[in-house]
Length: 291
Image 1 (cartoon, rainbow, N blue to C red):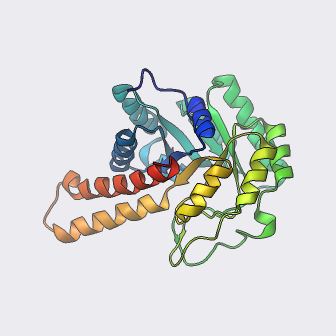
Image 2 (tube, rainbow, N blue to C red; image 1 turned 135 degrees about the horizontal axis):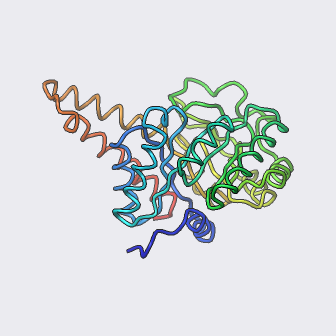
Image 3 (spheres, helix red, strand yellow; image 1 turned 30 degrees about the vertical axis):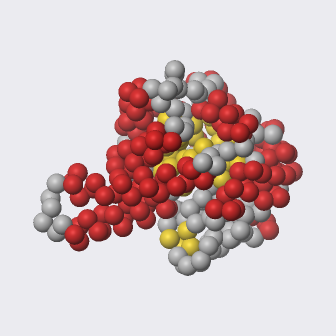
């Protein structure tokens, strides 16, 4: 199937050429990792595994590297590891040193100038250690946590929180980042009721043209299928999904504990969560790849 796994850069380039997007899915345990890998492998698609700072603290910064590497090597497969939302240079340095394939510096809450200064520091350090490492940064504000929301977070979706093409161009030129995550109407987490707000497709297109680097869509959970398709067509090359997987995990474990109250073997209790996460990831990967 795969002679040797392509690099993440190659996979992103191929996705751009084909007008499809690579799925990025977060984990905080081995069940989710198996589920995501099984889904990607069955469809023969590259996949990115993400861990936020909280998820890395739980799994272990280096343990995550060892886990993903074991899949890459055993199955000779294009599976990549990304340090999702990382808020300081120190923590970016930590994952670069640990051997992650990619890292996101999230300075969205900082001023434009501060965000640029730290992002540039991250890029310079990564280049000095391993030029293959991909550095992504966030511009604009889309909220912070992957959870079920009662309302759109304050400051999200306001005109000032959205990324402009001018800002995107200047940001990329001054930092040298490889990927940009813009605010284009997306939000982190999912609304409990109804669909998330519509994406600004025209803005995606103009930001992509101005930035001249591939774009990443964060806060993918809760976005309508139609919006996903249009966003990918307009220049999104990677899509992040987290909350949907968390909900699938929780519901499956809950059901398992209710159905088998006397079961004590964790692998039996967790079996349903692997199946459910795999189902969600399979649907998403098919959508992102037009399958």
